[in-house]
Amino acid sequence: MTVLDFMTFSPRSALAGLAAWIVTAACGVANAQTASQPFRDCDAVCPELVAVPAGTFVMGSSAKEKGRGPDEGPTHKVTIARPFAVGRFEVTFDEWDACVAAGGCKATDNGTAVASDAGWGRGRRPVINVSWRDAHDYGAWLSAKTGKPYRLLSEAEWEYAARAGGRSTFADGEQISPSAANFKDSGTNATVPVGGYAPNRFGIYDMAGNVWEWVEDCFTLTYDTAPADGGANAGGDCGRRMLRGGGWNTPDNFLRPAARGRNKVDFRDNDFGFRIARDLP
Image 1 (cartoon, one colour):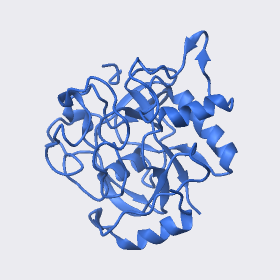
Image 2 (image 1 turned 180 degrees about the vertical axis):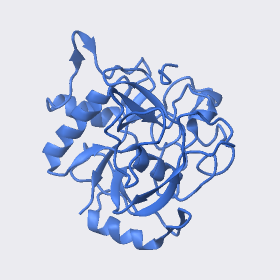
Image 3 (image 1 turned 90 degrees about the horizontal axis):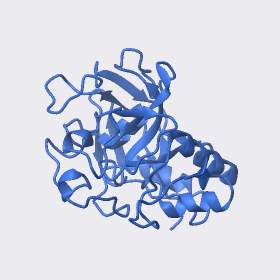
Image 4 (image 1 turned 120 degrees about the vertical axis):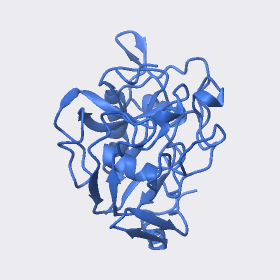
C-alpha cells in the first residue's frame, strides 16, 4: 500500500429533489427523506451526477476516534454555501476510455501505459493507475465536451459528501462491515464494479473503499490553514495532493470519512482513482 506516502435527468429536477433534505447547520446533521435524482450532462460517456445540498458540518476527527491519524485535526466547522454536483460513482474505465478515444486523456506517458487495469478488467470498474494530473485531464475534457465546469472535489466537499449528514466514525456507525464496502477485509484482492454496495444518504456509491480518490487540495499536515468555506486548500505542498476514501487493499481505519491520504501529483497506483464534481447554477 502506497497511499500514506505516502437515465438522464436535468440538473433542475435534481435540485428540486434537494427540498427533501433538511440540513441542521448547528450540528451538521441531515435528515434524508430521499436522495436527489441522478442526471447526466451528455450521453452515456458522461458520468452520472447527484446534487449534494448546502449545509454546515464539522470536518476532521476527535482525538478519541479509533484509528485517527495526526493529520485529521484540528476539527473545524465548514460551511458549504451552495449545492454542488458530484459523481454518483467513481469514474469508470468506460468513461475514462471515452476520454482517451476522443484525445482528451493519455493512453501512455513516456512509454508507460496510463490507466492499466492490472488484469482485472475494465468496463464498470473504477479507473485505476491514474495520477492527479490524469484526473485533471479528464475534468478538462469533460468540461470542454459539455460546457460545464467539471473539477475534482475539495477535501471538505469530499468529507461532507461522504458523511452525508452523519458524525460517526464511519458513514453509518462506529464499525464497517465487509458487506458494506470493498476493502482489505472483503477478500476481493481487486477492485469491483462500481455501485455494488449500498449508497450513502446522499445517493453516492463507494465513498468508502474500492479506490482512493484524488481531490484538489495541496498536502498539509494539519487543518490549521483549512478554508472554512469548503474550498480546496491551495497552500502547503502542492507537489503532493490529497486522496480520500481508502481502497480495495486498505484496512478499515482508512475508510473513515475523516481519514486522509496523499501522494505526488504524477504518481499512479492500482488503488488510485477519482470522482468528478461540478458547480451547480
